[in-house]
Image (tube, rainbow, N blue to C red; front, side, top):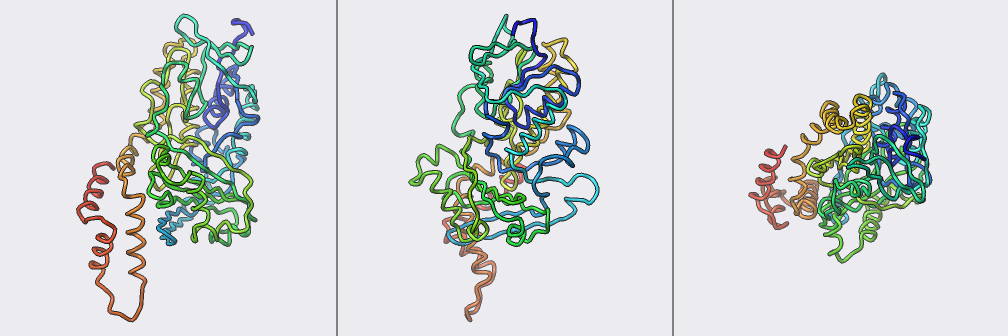
Length: 431
């Protein structure tokens, strides 16, 4: 195409961030092209996944009612694994999912959800082109003015990178460098098909209800954790590791994941299921500290994972909702200042604050310090299971006082009361 026949916006990546951005822009009458490398939107994604519905409501009120969602989450679960033992905390509050209004969150299958959201953007008038790899950006007079895909040159007033955590576009724009290993994890996930009735029986769910489970102690001492989400007729099971530590471990990432699947507390939940999807991908782990210092330059913006918008608190993982909000923020900045490209970037940053994305990530920043404590991935899970083991053991002997039981378990695991107190102090300071 010629420079005169340009689009208003070209978006690279048809994940939640890119499609939400395209939806908002096209609804406002902008001429938008979304370029997706995969054969279909979502076919390359690994997220568990889970969507907090406020983000969809921000995109369009009532949109969740027609969205490609799986189960509304009514059970928030935390599992702590040690050896063949496990402690599971199940918080069930049906009020999270009111009869009227939007339930707080749903599980999703990204291949299905992403394709649905991209189709909604197309309904608004955006063009979504799949199976196309963008090779490089076009720069003129210090501004990004388009992209090159194969032999094709496509021009736009604004190019938006929504191409994931290892954003090739952002690197080409000079906004980020190569990924630092300590800032990302390697995520591995399987989708395991099971009948809906079986899922509901195994997780104590009613029809349509779902569970979201975070798992600690499943990474054999490596910085990381696991997740399990119930879908309509499948389970998403996965884990995330720090790659540097995993490389030094005696087992491969796949072997550690297989150990999780075979754990006595996990295997009965997936027994008889058929694995229909296996995938691996990089996952941003740095939270607020992982947000890139510069998210824009003239003619170019970064959104979603490309910008580092992921929160991991240890008891929940958020990425899809933040991606959607960042896409909306970018679209609003373009709509408001499309006639003054130099003002789009600064306004985008203001929208990220106005829509509470940046403040939300900043508020969760302290969890990073807590999750950096190495012994919470092996000694702490073992301590927790030891305490519960002693608590529920009845053998005819005089039981120890609870104080003696806890202190004995702390010592047996090579920890001290002072270490636990320091973790608590760090937690108070961080949070």
